[in-house]
Amino acid sequence: MIKITAIETGKAICKTRQQTAKEGRSAIGRKIDIFRDPNFVSPLPILTFLIEHPEGKFLIDTGDTAKNSNPGYLPTWNPFFTKMVKIKVAPVEEIGYQLHEMGVNPATDISAVILTHFHHDHAGGLDHFPHTRIIGSRENWKECQSMKGKIAGYLPQRMPIWFKPELIDFTANPISNFSASFPITKDGRIFLVPTPGHCTGHLSVVVRDEDITYFIAGDASYNEENIRNEKTDGVTFKPEIALKTLQTIKQFATNEPTIVLPCHDPNSITRLKNRQLFA
Ligand SMILES: [Zn+2]
Image (cartoon, rainbow, N blue to C red; front, side, top):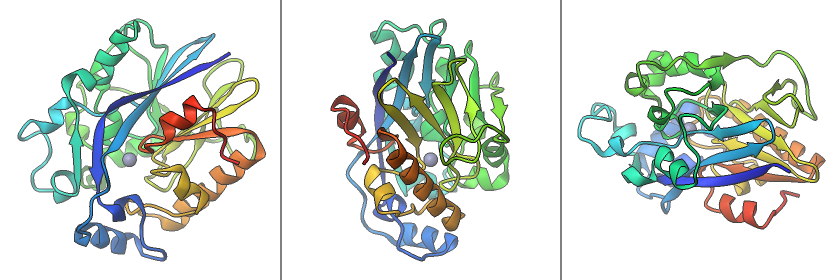
């Protein structure tokens, strides 16, 4: 039996056009739409997921940090950081404090942290894991370090100085309808799959328990409904790839009984609690 717990590490508020783009818009058109959109969505959770497996405890994403609200933390020259998205994290909402509350010591009890991608609301809690193995995608790490990355949602300059993630590539092990996968546990029950689109090299985490599969989707989609309706987000620079990823997740979740868990879906917590399947 594998246990999965959703941990909410604060709130993110973004424009409605970031969450769901207008059909057929180009990558740049989507950014203009976000900029011009007067409407913000209701505050969305920033979720991380703790997986308790016989081979160890694995944490998916680290949430953001309370430092986000310190003047100067976000680059003021970039309105996408300071005006288009609002992040609110209290110190006690940070992942390290919450794990401690649950009786899990982040320094000693986590076998690995897996990052779906390096955007700041997923990697902002890295400070709590200087002693832990941290896994991410090589392609996404490359984007995070690039000039484009510094404009588009990554804060590599704020990452801990010790940070050297273990980088993975998707080259083999096709599973279900995914062309490749990367195993995390020896029993094959936890593995990573490529879900690019929201950003380059984005990955999702699949957990196959005996009778049910969990698909931890990161930001492959902001919510389950958008996967069902094949609606891509405003963030993507590759709309066709983002769409293909949504279709692949949809097919996967139809092939086997699956609970789909995006990181900013307000319904992820209830779906997990009620074991509500995608199909
Ligand atoms: Zn993201």
